[in-house]
Length: 469
Image (cartoon, rainbow, N blue to C red; front, side, top):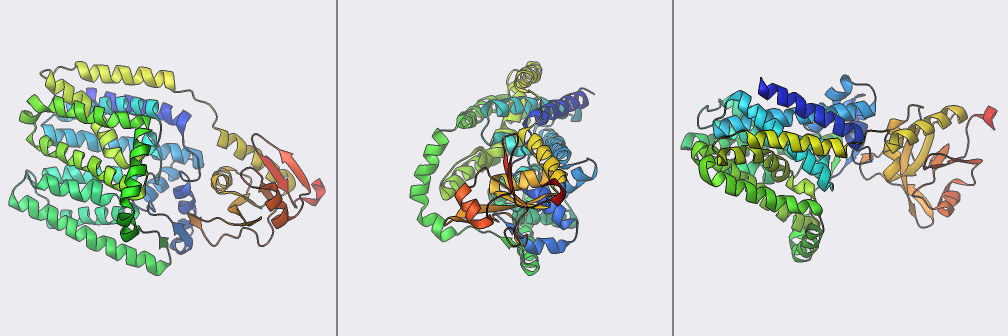
């Protein structure tokens, strides 16, 4: 019973945190826009420009499930975060039960306490650590990572059938299409775990890895036939420029507050599990090495990309921090003091840090909806950072296309999104001036009929309801 109660406490803390820290920026809402498109048919995939991490699985179906039981984009974003929080807790509890031979109730209790403490630490550190509950920000692949690591650990005691292995490979392959971090987070750690198991278990894990590569190739080929453009990493260029990018990544790592959490988590786990934890959970010993491998892989990805942020270390930061209460409890002969302390400290920190209120994007979108109804506005443009949030959140029927300033004029700026959406032809009804050069706007769109000041926005109106002129 205590496990379920602490699980409910974890979800309550997460709900309170999401109410005040819900990301509603352009990147956070990309999956919401893609879901709106594919709801009308899979042909929308052919018009979609995607980055290196499309977020098709499991982010897209999970967001669609959240949207089906909630009203509006904001509510769906919150519901998605709660879904991620629930599955994160559920799979972490199964991991603790499998790796350290805990009862179901104890595993759920320690998983909830660890996640509450990790959420408080994430809120304190900021950066990208707290975006794990945002679609398209590696949240989906983190859930698949936990699920597959649990599956890998079970192969010694409860071997999977051929169908189960293929089913796992299907999920991993789809996640690999959606996120290039799958080899670093799933394939490498799973292979490392199987090294501590017998021959049959190794064959199943290696077979799953090979089958997942085939699934990825087939899904990419299907998406290519649909016309979807998925960005890929130029490995030759990446390794050629790795020395210079590694220096840039090291400087960005040193400047990040959250980077202090990586050695703290790693050192705490290593010391606490060096005693009784290893004796009682030999599978957990191999899992800790797998977790360390994801951290090393994060450093390599940072060296390739030239910058480091918390999203590359989500397994170390979230799974590792959540393991600390169990690690210290085992270190002091199974006492529950770390469990109680993690819950208490986490709830107190969240209580001081959570200040619920209306998010600025919501207020701006509501104001924009009012202007759209007053002046009969249907189409508009804005810079990339504002077009998607204001376009999706307003309920006045106003569609906003992203544009950028180029050579004294405006051009469409579809980095991630529907590339078939018209931006400047025909001329839009309005434009959000923030983030754009006024001279370039006037050169491309002409002089506005009126300029309207709103909450942090200036709206240029070019045409609209004639009765309101």
